[in-house]
Length: 284
Image (cartoon, rainbow, N blue to C red; front, side, top):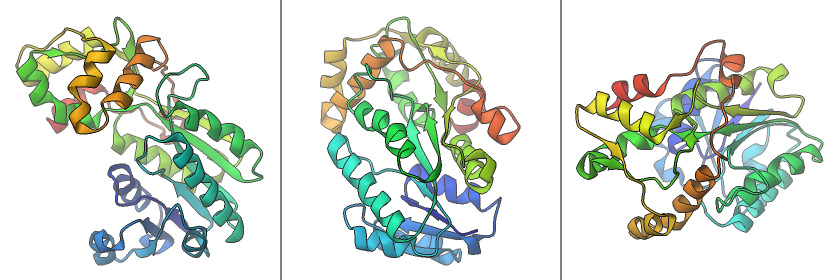
């Protein structure tokens, strides 16, 4: 079997390639990269490189040629129409290249009433794939735990988590665990040939007081919970370019839409995911 990982240079994509390489020979893996100039790490390791552009069907068709299973990691854009157009172009390219198997990476925020700015894309995916004729699985990630490590110095300085989520909990998964599950789904046809819809989470979700308690224990610094408003949160992070998007995600959390917990990770991999305390201790 020949596997294609799109977006392989991204944070998740690199983990997926690494995990996939534990389950099949690197000779069976083609990495799709939007900017091949950044592909040196894969080229040096002997991986086959393919240039991809989600806006160019011809380029995507060439990249998918000879592939049995596509692992599709979407681009980072906060425009729903653009994300849908990119996916439709990729589907067209898959059909032209005669690819029949897809592992599609999605996100927890796919409910019809979810105010997260990209929820429309994630809600569209399963229905679109159901009518595609492909053999596929949708693998939804909960919130990545990884960015929390980068935010810890800021949280220590603030002495508080400020996410505007009230008393609601959030579900998390690490990128490494996500990638392990995605790779296993890709190489095991029985996990991906019936339109399965998975949600990857840790074994429990976390309220902000619970999360701040763990962070306090891990860092040795007192971190509490003092939420700002959704509007204020968007203003604080506006300079980083994604303030409104993040604020809309936490608005969804405050509605209780980001707290689901499943055992899908254990079902796929045969073991439990890394919990939050263990993850932060290992990575802080």
